[in-house]
Image 1 (tube, rainbow, N blue to C red):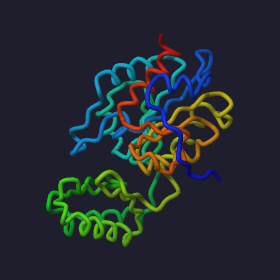
Image 2 (image 1 turned 180 degrees about the horizontal axis):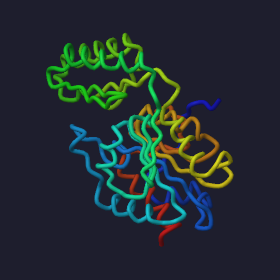
Image 3 (image 1 turned 135 degrees about the vertical axis):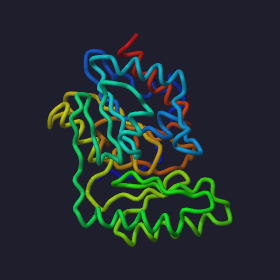
Image 4 (image 1 turned 180 degrees about the vertical axis):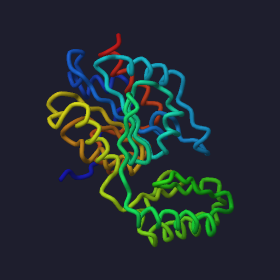
Length: 273
């Protein structure tokens, strides 16, 4: 079982090349698995306002077309929402932390929640809306998981509302995870971004995928740590965080979202140029 660490930092394109010489080869395929919010796009005060930086988006489109690059976006957003935000055809998308997966050919894998959990979810949404959807806070209902956003709540009220929201989620049996100015409620099932990443890799490359393909994973949040943990020793993962002392399962830390453009350039330099 891997342990969390203070990961070495990578700040620019030269650092990728210096720290990972030979990890990527134009002769071999690479699977690039990426989170969206805070990773491909900077965090915005409202999820509807996020946008990928122009240069990053252009490079992402380029590498997505390469036959040796397999690209998947694994997001906490609902599936249709993340597809709309990224808007690249021919790649794999996973929404709701991997509970919904859609492949380039339109086929899907949906994690079927038990009836009791579905019922609890409906009740949880109702109670959250009734008790804590106020003072600028709101509930993003993604049908199988939800995000309680409190970024715009006055500072004096934040802790109280956040605490109550967490208690309501826990009461209905859901896991309340801290995110950026938000609480993410996930169903009590053994499925997360890590399980989704492994499932996607096995579906594409077979059970012995780790011998066939190099894997690059990047994310910025606690929910991304599930993928970083299962990929430890099998791929290379990158945690985006300004906190120099953050404990992570990732192999490396990127100090800001803007370094993601360099990560994609590092991949493009091997496969595209």
